[in-house]
Length: 285
Image 1 (cartoon, rainbow, N blue to C red):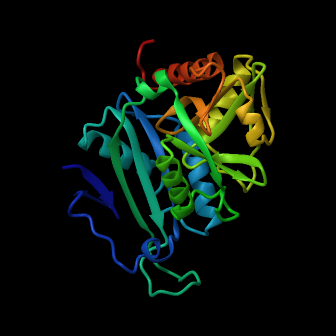
Image 2 (image 1 turned 180 degrees about the vertical axis):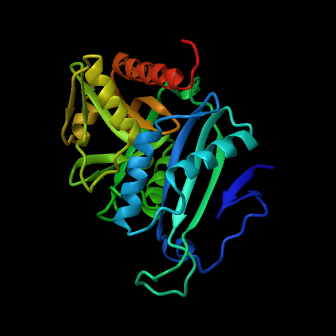
Protein backbone atom coordinates (compact mmCIF):
# COMPACT_ATOMS: atom_id res chain seq x y z
CA UNK A 1 0.00 0.00 0.00
CA UNK A 2 1.34 3.42 -0.97
CA UNK A 3 2.21 6.26 1.37
CA UNK A 4 0.63 9.64 0.59
CA UNK A 5 1.08 13.13 2.02
CA UNK A 6 -1.84 15.07 3.49
CA UNK A 7 -1.60 18.30 5.48
CA UNK A 8 1.82 17.64 6.96
CA UNK A 9 1.42 13.90 7.55
CA UNK A 10 2.63 10.81 5.71
CA UNK A 11 -0.23 8.32 5.73
CA UNK A 12 -1.19 5.00 4.18
CA UNK A 13 -3.42 5.77 1.21
CA UNK A 14 -6.52 4.25 2.84
CA UNK A 15 -6.01 6.42 5.95
CA UNK A 16 -5.93 9.80 4.17
CA UNK A 17 -9.28 11.59 4.56
CA UNK A 18 -10.51 15.01 3.39
CA UNK A 19 -13.62 16.81 4.61
CA UNK A 20 -16.70 16.87 2.37
CA UNK A 21 -16.66 20.64 2.94
CA UNK A 22 -13.24 21.06 1.36
CA UNK A 23 -13.62 23.65 -1.41
CA UNK A 24 -11.70 21.40 -3.77
CA UNK A 25 -14.47 18.82 -3.41
CA UNK A 26 -17.36 21.31 -3.45
CA UNK A 27 -16.15 23.86 -6.04
CA UNK A 28 -12.99 22.51 -7.68
CA UNK A 29 -11.31 25.46 -5.94
CA UNK A 30 -7.67 24.51 -6.17
CA UNK A 31 -4.67 23.85 -8.37
CA UNK A 32 -2.42 20.89 -9.04
CA UNK A 33 0.95 19.98 -10.49
CA UNK A 34 2.66 16.83 -11.72
CA UNK A 35 6.41 16.37 -11.76
CA UNK A 36 8.15 13.51 -13.59
CA UNK A 37 10.53 11.18 -11.80
CA UNK A 38 13.38 9.30 -13.49
CA UNK A 39 15.89 7.15 -11.60
CA UNK A 40 14.18 8.26 -8.36
CA UNK A 41 15.02 11.89 -9.21
CA UNK A 42 12.59 14.78 -9.68
CA UNK A 43 13.06 16.61 -12.98
CA UNK A 44 12.62 20.27 -13.92
CA UNK A 45 12.14 21.69 -10.43
CA UNK A 46 12.44 25.37 -11.28
CA UNK A 47 9.83 25.49 -14.08
CA UNK A 48 7.55 23.40 -11.86
CA UNK A 49 7.75 25.95 -9.04
CA UNK A 50 7.35 28.84 -11.47
CA UNK A 51 4.10 27.47 -12.91
CA UNK A 52 2.78 26.30 -9.53
CA UNK A 53 3.37 29.75 -8.04
CA UNK A 54 1.60 31.42 -10.94
CA UNK A 55 -1.47 29.18 -10.66
CA UNK A 56 -1.66 29.72 -6.90
CA UNK A 57 -1.33 33.48 -7.38
CA UNK A 58 -4.08 33.65 -9.99
CA UNK A 59 -6.49 32.04 -7.50
CA UNK A 60 -5.16 34.12 -4.57
CA UNK A 61 -4.01 30.97 -2.80
CA UNK A 62 -1.07 30.99 -0.40
CA UNK A 63 1.80 28.54 -0.53
CA UNK A 64 0.90 25.89 2.09
CA UNK A 65 4.56 24.88 2.39
CA UNK A 66 7.84 26.56 1.57
CA UNK A 67 9.58 25.49 -1.63
CA UNK A 68 12.21 23.66 0.40
CA UNK A 69 9.48 21.86 2.34
CA UNK A 70 7.81 20.87 -0.93
CA UNK A 71 11.05 19.35 -2.20
CA UNK A 72 11.62 17.48 1.06
CA UNK A 73 8.05 16.15 0.88
CA UNK A 74 8.45 15.03 -2.74
CA UNK A 75 11.75 13.30 -2.06
CA UNK A 76 10.31 11.60 1.03
CA UNK A 77 7.34 10.25 -0.94
CA UNK A 78 9.66 8.94 -3.63
CA UNK A 79 11.75 7.23 -0.97
CA UNK A 80 8.85 5.78 1.02
CA UNK A 81 7.20 4.40 -2.12
CA UNK A 82 10.46 3.25 -3.68
CA UNK A 83 9.54 5.08 -6.88
CA UNK A 84 12.03 4.58 -9.70
CA UNK A 85 10.15 6.09 -12.64
CA UNK A 86 6.80 7.84 -12.92
CA UNK A 87 5.56 11.00 -11.27
CA UNK A 88 4.38 12.88 -8.20
CA UNK A 89 0.93 14.50 -8.19
CA UNK A 90 0.42 17.48 -5.86
CA UNK A 91 -2.77 19.41 -5.13
CA UNK A 92 -3.58 22.52 -3.11
CA UNK A 93 -7.16 23.59 -2.39
CA UNK A 94 -8.40 26.64 -0.54
CA UNK A 95 -9.38 24.45 2.40
CA UNK A 96 -12.44 23.57 4.47
CA UNK A 97 -15.22 26.14 4.90
CA UNK A 98 -19.04 26.45 4.75
CA UNK A 99 -20.28 26.41 1.17
CA UNK A 100 -20.22 29.95 -0.19
CA UNK A 101 -19.01 31.14 -3.59
CA UNK A 102 -16.86 33.99 -2.24
CA UNK A 103 -13.36 33.21 -0.98
CA UNK A 104 -13.48 32.57 2.79
CA UNK A 105 -10.90 34.32 4.94
CA UNK A 106 -8.34 32.85 7.31
CA UNK A 107 -8.74 29.18 6.48
CA UNK A 108 -5.90 26.72 6.09
CA UNK A 109 -5.24 25.32 2.60
CA UNK A 110 -5.45 21.58 2.05
CA UNK A 111 -2.31 20.10 0.51
CA UNK A 112 -1.89 16.52 -0.61
CA UNK A 113 0.46 14.53 -2.80
CA UNK A 114 0.95 10.98 -4.04
CA UNK A 115 3.29 9.07 -6.33
CA UNK A 116 2.53 6.83 -9.28
CA UNK A 117 4.77 4.49 -11.23
CA UNK A 118 4.87 4.71 -15.02
CA UNK A 119 7.26 3.59 -17.75
CA UNK A 120 8.47 6.76 -19.44
CA UNK A 121 11.92 6.28 -20.95
CA UNK A 122 11.14 2.99 -22.66
CA UNK A 123 7.46 3.60 -23.32
CA UNK A 124 6.14 1.28 -26.06
CA UNK A 125 3.96 4.16 -27.30
CA UNK A 126 7.08 6.11 -28.22
CA UNK A 127 8.05 3.32 -30.60
CA UNK A 128 4.62 2.77 -32.16
CA UNK A 129 3.29 6.31 -32.06
CA UNK A 130 -0.24 7.18 -30.93
CA UNK A 131 -3.57 8.05 -32.48
CA UNK A 132 -5.36 11.36 -31.88
CA UNK A 133 -8.86 12.58 -32.66
CA UNK A 134 -10.12 16.16 -32.63
CA UNK A 135 -12.86 17.23 -30.21
CA UNK A 136 -14.59 20.52 -29.42
CA UNK A 137 -12.86 22.66 -26.80
CA UNK A 138 -15.64 23.40 -24.31
CA UNK A 139 -13.46 24.60 -21.41
CA UNK A 140 -13.49 27.88 -19.51
CA UNK A 141 -11.43 30.93 -20.52
CA UNK A 142 -8.56 30.58 -17.99
CA UNK A 143 -6.86 27.46 -19.23
CA UNK A 144 -3.49 28.96 -18.27
CA UNK A 145 -4.33 28.13 -14.63
CA UNK A 146 -3.60 24.51 -13.74
CA UNK A 147 -6.99 24.13 -12.09
CA UNK A 148 -8.23 20.88 -10.56
CA UNK A 149 -11.58 21.51 -12.30
CA UNK A 150 -10.96 19.24 -15.29
CA UNK A 151 -14.43 18.14 -16.34
CA UNK A 152 -14.03 19.58 -19.85
CA UNK A 153 -10.81 17.64 -20.34
CA UNK A 154 -12.38 14.47 -18.93
CA UNK A 155 -15.30 14.71 -21.34
CA UNK A 156 -12.94 15.31 -24.26
CA UNK A 157 -10.70 12.41 -23.25
CA UNK A 158 -13.69 10.09 -23.02
CA UNK A 159 -14.71 11.07 -26.55
CA UNK A 160 -11.21 10.19 -27.73
CA UNK A 161 -11.19 6.87 -25.90
CA UNK A 162 -14.56 5.90 -27.37
CA UNK A 163 -13.11 6.54 -30.84
CA UNK A 164 -10.14 4.29 -30.11
CA UNK A 165 -7.62 7.14 -29.78
CA UNK A 166 -4.92 7.75 -27.18
CA UNK A 167 -5.50 11.50 -26.94
CA UNK A 168 -7.97 14.19 -27.94
CA UNK A 169 -6.84 17.43 -29.58
CA UNK A 170 -9.25 20.16 -28.58
CA UNK A 171 -10.37 22.58 -31.27
CA UNK A 172 -11.72 26.12 -30.96
CA UNK A 173 -12.72 28.33 -33.91
CA UNK A 174 -11.08 25.84 -36.27
CA UNK A 175 -7.70 25.96 -34.52
CA UNK A 176 -6.11 23.28 -32.34
CA UNK A 177 -5.62 24.53 -28.78
CA UNK A 178 -3.98 21.59 -27.00
CA UNK A 179 -4.49 17.99 -25.98
CA UNK A 180 -6.71 16.95 -23.08
CA UNK A 181 -3.56 16.33 -21.04
CA UNK A 182 -0.73 17.40 -23.34
CA UNK A 183 0.70 20.11 -25.57
CA UNK A 184 0.21 19.79 -29.35
CA UNK A 185 2.74 20.14 -32.18
CA UNK A 186 2.86 19.56 -35.92
CA UNK A 187 5.87 19.48 -38.23
CA UNK A 188 5.95 20.80 -41.79
CA UNK A 189 9.05 20.94 -44.00
CA UNK A 190 11.29 20.33 -40.99
CA UNK A 191 9.72 23.12 -38.90
CA UNK A 192 7.90 22.50 -35.62
CA UNK A 193 4.70 24.52 -35.21
CA UNK A 194 3.00 24.94 -31.84
CA UNK A 195 0.40 27.36 -30.51
CA UNK A 196 1.76 30.45 -28.67
CA UNK A 197 1.04 30.93 -24.98
CA UNK A 198 -2.12 32.77 -23.92
CA UNK A 199 -5.05 32.20 -21.58
CA UNK A 200 -6.29 29.63 -24.13
CA UNK A 201 -3.71 26.97 -23.23
CA UNK A 202 -1.67 25.75 -20.30
CA UNK A 203 1.98 26.72 -20.21
CA UNK A 204 3.35 23.19 -20.56
CA UNK A 205 6.69 22.68 -18.82
CA UNK A 206 7.77 20.09 -21.36
CA UNK A 207 6.68 22.54 -24.08
CA UNK A 208 8.88 25.25 -22.55
CA UNK A 209 11.89 22.93 -22.32
CA UNK A 210 11.39 21.49 -25.81
CA UNK A 211 11.37 25.01 -27.24
CA UNK A 212 14.65 25.68 -25.45
CA UNK A 213 16.14 22.41 -26.73
CA UNK A 214 15.01 23.16 -30.29
CA UNK A 215 16.73 26.53 -30.17
CA UNK A 216 19.88 25.04 -28.65
CA UNK A 217 20.11 22.31 -31.30
CA UNK A 218 19.12 24.35 -34.31
CA UNK A 219 15.68 22.83 -34.85
CA UNK A 220 13.39 25.38 -36.51
CA UNK A 221 10.27 26.16 -34.47
CA UNK A 222 7.43 28.62 -34.94
CA UNK A 223 4.83 29.57 -32.36
CA UNK A 224 1.52 30.24 -34.11
CA UNK A 225 -2.01 28.92 -34.38
CA UNK A 226 -2.60 25.96 -36.69
CA UNK A 227 -5.81 24.50 -38.09
CA UNK A 228 -7.08 20.94 -38.12
CA UNK A 229 -6.55 20.90 -41.88
CA UNK A 230 -2.90 21.84 -41.43
CA UNK A 231 -2.51 19.09 -38.88
CA UNK A 232 -4.00 16.52 -41.25
CA UNK A 233 -1.55 17.61 -43.98
CA UNK A 234 1.49 17.78 -41.68
CA UNK A 235 4.61 15.71 -42.24
CA UNK A 236 4.66 14.79 -38.56
CA UNK A 237 2.83 15.49 -35.33
CA UNK A 238 3.63 14.88 -31.70
CA UNK A 239 2.55 15.69 -28.15
CA UNK A 240 4.34 16.34 -24.88
CA UNK A 241 3.47 16.08 -21.20
CA UNK A 242 5.10 15.51 -17.81
CA UNK A 243 5.02 11.72 -17.84
CA UNK A 244 5.17 11.00 -21.57
CA UNK A 245 7.93 13.50 -22.46
CA UNK A 246 7.38 13.34 -26.24
CA UNK A 247 5.08 10.92 -28.07
CA UNK A 248 4.90 10.80 -31.88
CA UNK A 249 1.43 10.96 -33.41
CA UNK A 250 0.85 8.69 -36.40
CA UNK A 251 -2.86 9.28 -37.00
CA UNK A 252 -5.28 12.20 -36.58
CA UNK A 253 -9.01 11.67 -37.09
CA UNK A 254 -8.25 8.28 -38.66
CA UNK A 255 -5.98 9.91 -41.26
CA UNK A 256 -2.40 8.70 -41.46
CA UNK A 257 0.19 11.36 -40.73
CA UNK A 258 3.31 11.16 -42.88
CA UNK A 259 4.20 7.55 -43.50
CA UNK A 260 2.23 6.40 -40.47
CA UNK A 261 5.36 5.92 -38.36
CA UNK A 262 7.06 8.11 -35.74
CA UNK A 263 8.80 10.91 -37.64
CA UNK A 264 12.46 11.98 -37.40
CA UNK A 265 11.79 15.36 -35.76
CA UNK A 266 9.56 13.85 -33.07
CA UNK A 267 12.11 11.13 -32.38
CA UNK A 268 14.91 13.68 -32.23
CA UNK A 269 13.02 15.93 -29.79
CA UNK A 270 12.17 12.95 -27.60
CA UNK A 271 15.76 11.76 -27.48
CA UNK A 272 17.08 15.24 -26.70
CA UNK A 273 14.67 15.56 -23.79
CA UNK A 274 15.51 12.06 -22.51
CA UNK A 275 19.23 12.84 -22.65
CA UNK A 276 18.60 16.00 -20.65
CA UNK A 277 16.46 14.14 -18.11
CA UNK A 278 19.01 11.38 -17.62
CA UNK A 279 21.73 13.95 -17.14
CA UNK A 280 19.69 15.63 -14.39
CA UNK A 281 19.10 12.22 -12.81
CA UNK A 282 22.82 11.46 -12.88
CA UNK A 283 22.45 8.50 -15.22
CA UNK A 284 25.37 7.91 -17.58
CA UNK A 285 24.38 8.18 -21.24
